[in-house]
Length: 178
Length: 156
Image 1 (cartoon, one colour):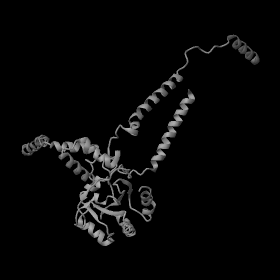
Image 2 (image 1 turned 180 degrees about the vertical axis):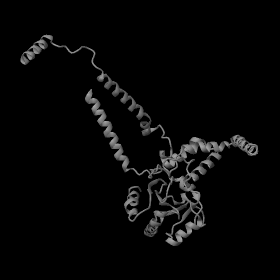
Image 3 (image 1 turned 90 degrees about the vertical axis):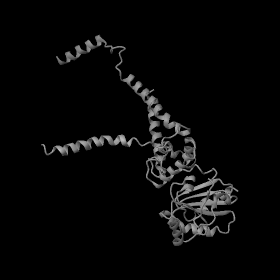
Image 4 (image 1 turned 180 degrees about the horizontal axis):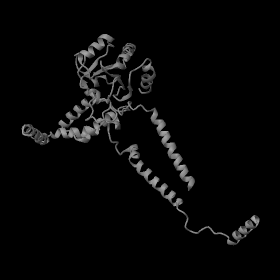
């Protein structure tokens, strides 16, 4: 009986320590997205370039990279050169398309961001009251979603994309699923 | 003393006036939709501020989430549907109070299990600490007497 209690006490302490160790790895700012593996929210939203509205469903049949950004976001500046490079690199792929969502921003802010840092060439949704962003479960910038040709979210990147992200993260997902 | 009277009367008037203020304040009636908006927003966690509800937070995201709730309430969506809308997008992180479902159940039941285990441990420990009343230690009286005698003899 005495030993039983010792074992119970010891295992409780061990369990607490293990949970604590696992918890240390967690970033409280990183909220796992329940959208991964589920259909991406559809939208038809105004464009930053004042052109025709951007309709989510028009990208069906292609892999879609949706990048949420804002001119107010420092990490987006850091990420921008990679987005330009990625857009250039994937321009010839007819199974892959990129769009941006400029949220919580002013039109002037968004446009001058692109004018000064370079325009990657793809279109941007203009989402000043972050309706689209909230619909996608965005809570910071930059955040990027990879959506498969059937409209299912396959990956969410919280924080900036980095050199080699496409080859390391996106390509393996795209090649696994037809 | 006489000179001070008017100012005292003025002071009393002010004090009485202050008493009346809350009764005026409570006369404002809240819009029932706003009450529901508040009820929902108070249970949802602002996604960028760790432990504040959407209703209490001043962050831009919380304000925009609040306006999404307001739009949905105005459109007549039930409370459960609105809560579920945020749950589908932000996961159970969004609930300030964890739901009693799935793995979360452990959070709710865990403390009670710990309490029961603790009570059992205390009970068994208390039982052990009690002096055993069954029998006083038996002393072999003859052996004791003999031993005492021989010790005394040694001294002599």
